[in-house]
Length: 257
Image: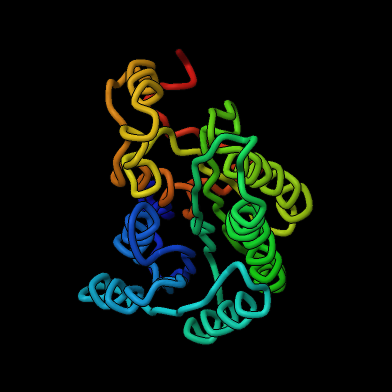
């Protein structure tokens, strides 16, 4: 009989992580790899090759694929290239790629709105759709989407980001409703306020908001990459086999205050 702790192992699993070249997504991909998974980092950035080489210095293989997820044809090509590198099998899809733009709603540029929706929302659906076709044939899969605190509170100066992440939460639930009975779980993580490249300019752009947010977090600090790694591995593992359609906050207690 398998020991319970062994259910957290991802040995032999195959994963795709979008936006995995750097930042939070690189950290989450690293956690999957550390747990034993073979990983493909899918990103538009040239540095994705360097990131994959760094991560793959030990353990299971790590691959790099470059694609523009805002363009559906390139997204489809990128997915197929990822799948080929994994030998046609996929256990885990982590939809982490995302962009941000801060601007008052009355001045928000249409092109910025569309680009954010294309990458943060449409790409999540299209990648999940492609992965779903693969996973449903297998009768097994784990899809993990990265949502945000804006699922629960929309904040200011980020109308497109807030709309996109609220949409991610609903896509998560909708796909879970269709696929959970077929062995494919779909969940989302809603990170709290994390110290990332997307948020580093908030101190300058809106210092009052930054101070208000920090003051509301019971742990008294913004999150770090390490704070997301355990939840990612858990949702990707057998230990979370009866969890689907959930949006799990990792927020330092922010929502409870």
